[in-house]
Image (tube, rainbow, N blue to C red; front, side, top):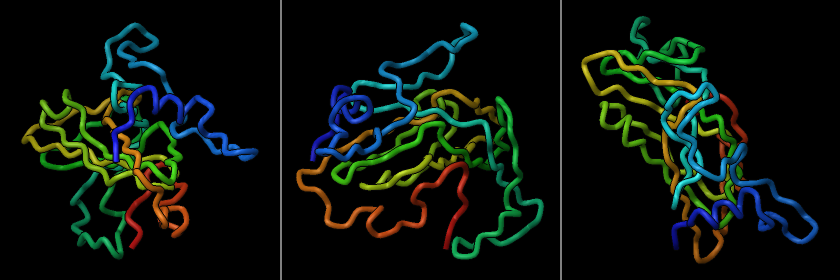
Length: 199
């Protein structure tokens, strides 16, 4: 197994490698930026996103689910109650102290059957006490990635939409897997937006 370089990632997103004979497979990341973006359309500094040396920095969308204990429900991963969240849409969300928000990426993924992705948090957010948690992007999975941003501090914290929020490292297996996420009909296949736990 080896980590994919910028050249290999770019080939899977805009190159010819996603043509399999006459069949065209979709790009691995859509939309895709060939370089790291650090300035927005207004000329303001932002948390970077786009292609890095050995990974890709994704952006957070502008819809959030803020965790709340106002309804004092029990958290059950097998029968999740959506009353545990408050919906919010905007350019910036406030993560309550010692709490978290869910959000999805702007980017949509089509992971090849011989590739898997590992999500890591951004250094700037980590230095502020914001942890980004996500499960791996499994071989054959497609969809927008749902991320958890946990505020580990005793103070409110801002998280900005349309900015870099996490980095994904992609690894190519030496041998394609026998059972991909798509072939086993994974429950989060083709998800868009913030998908809550499906027991």
